[in-house]
Image (cartoon, rainbow, N blue to C red):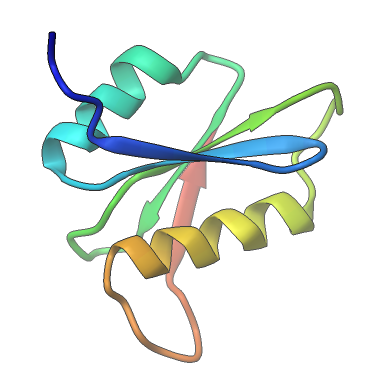
Length: 89
């Protein structure tokens, strides 16, 4: 079987999955994500992909998006004071 090349970070109200390679990005989207999740990546840059999966809450809030953006920046090896993230549901 194929090795999972993505990581999942679990928080109280949401989980964040992040690809650790281009294969991991594909696995994350195809195996872990659902249509209800929020997908993020760095705007205009090659980067990891991150997906936010809510556990019960009806809406994505700033805490979840900020946490996912921080995880995304870390796994994309992006170092700056401001992270150019785009996301889509």
